[in-house]
Image (cartoon, rainbow, N blue to C red):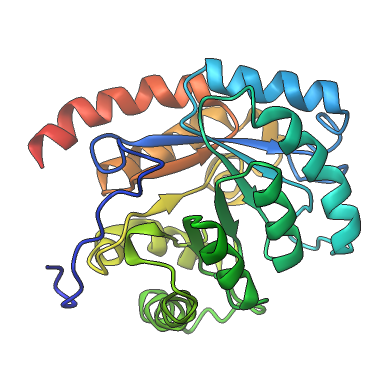
Length: 281
């Protein structure tokens, strides 16, 4: 039992190594405007090739998104998002041996993506923007990644208390929809709805988030929080070393999955972390 009284959720059946080693989720954005790789993988051929490369490099999950959620992003209609992601998922599902996650907060997009072959729902609004997405996931037996987010930044908040309250609401939605605890993964939402100091604090306090009794995913890859640490003028695609450092720290503090652009480099780095830390645990 965790200190909160919640039973530790066992690994989801799709990810049998969850909790045994740090898993790596590879990012595939089929968008024109994502902060780091917008426009690179919009064509079906480019998206297919990159997804296969992510798997070959060691990705345990391929996360496909059709709407940028970078700061200042412009939401796209569900129909446009679906036109971007569904054909790619349908083409990839028979070819990948690792599960596909759909990065969306829209229930209708999640339904079409799961029907096309996605297996996991990754919701940057923690099931709270469109709560019916939880019922969609339950209908398909799909695990959910529940990310903390806020509409506005409030630097006065104790960010861990805020996350606990947020996840209580998300967990209630998931459980009402019939999603079992074993199919829930929490994400502190580094880069979303927090001050720079709160981003760092959320990462520093990962062990407290783990006390809720769920696997934890962390995604810091190429984000602006890294640029502020070393050099804000460094383009996102050149933030590899900071990304690896952040995810090595996350793995050391107990993260179970990291979401990254550069898969092979992270796989190698996290093998070292796991050799030391997972055996110690």
